[in-house]
Image (cartoon, rainbow, N blue to C red; front, side):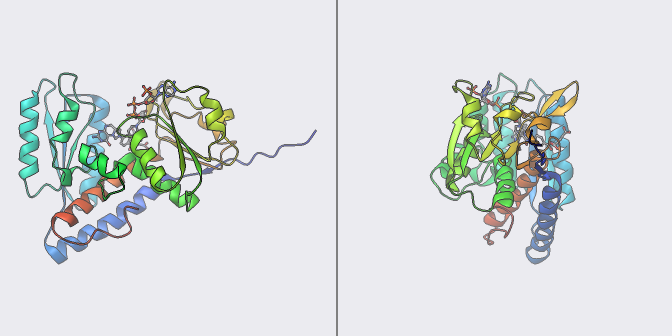
Length: 298
Ligand SMILES: NC(=O)C1=CN([C@@H]2O[C@H](COP(=O)(O)OP(=O)(O)OC[C@H]3O[C@@H](n4cnc5c(N)ncnc54)[C@H](OP(=O)(O)O)[C@@H]3O)[C@@H](O)[C@H]2O)C=CC1
Ligand SMILES: Nc1nc(=O)c2c([nH]1)NC[C@@H]1CN(c3ccc(C(=O)N[C@@H](CCC(=O)O)C(=O)O)cc3)C=[N+]21
């Protein structure tokens, strides 16, 4: 019987990649301060007391200050009205010290998420969630690109170089991950399939894919024997289980088959935050009539 030598996948170190990206951002922030007297500012709005959201907001604030930007945190009670939230966004839109605005999602159920997001001035929409930025991305125009898919794209380009002609499977079709991820892959000339809860025979689709991006929100959903040998697997999932934080991919099984794979934690999550800072720097440059920062966003 032939002995199968297992070659475990290369680990894609999102944490290290993100740290390097934040270092480049910090240098450009320092330069924009000394050359132009401008300090980028990011406002983060958190409504309610969801503990996971509070953790993200804290780590975003810390990362913002670490690269030399100003961080403005707005914590509102869970019962905040739509009008109160819209009034805060109007104030932030008008505030010249604020270059980026992020409203942490999900919002409490009584608030109209789409209306709130679309109230953000598009040039300060560092999440890329407004209809204008989503439409620009979909039509190939210069857009503010959602941070999580942008981070995934950077990791994929770093690993593969060109994505042209690759078969890519995106599992999940949310507005914040799956859909913009598919747009970015398409713009890079991958052949893109988007799977969701009504998809038939997901394992078969997955076995054809050179690139798998899993954004489902179910622990260990993607099985090891769905992975094409050598494929690049990007695990967006963040699931808190009794066994700790896990992704959407059965990591232990998938890494025996994949060519490269992101871990959770330490994969996509840190890239999301670094890309948020990159978008904030880009927004700051544009509003001040400066050239777009180089070497940050693809
Ligand atoms: N690392 C990071 O920076 C970030 C991580 N996340 C994580 O990524 C994951 C996805 O987030 P998000 O996109 O917001 O989640 P959503 O819940 O908005 O979307 C999940 C998607 O998965 C699809 N889905 C659910 N069940 C199945 C199934 N059985 N087969 C195929 N598809 C299925 C849904 O399909 P349908 O549309 O048909 O319902 C939906 O499109 C979560 O774990 C989240 O915590 C999110 C943002 C940032
Ligand atoms: N308007 C808005 N924009 C967002 O970008 C947004 C949002 N709302 N709502 C929630 C999701 C989720 N999200 C994450 C960011 C960082 C990590 C992250 O840094 N994760 C670490 C681990 C953190 C931990 O230990 O909990 C890692 O994966 O290594 C994860 C998830 C951004 N989101």
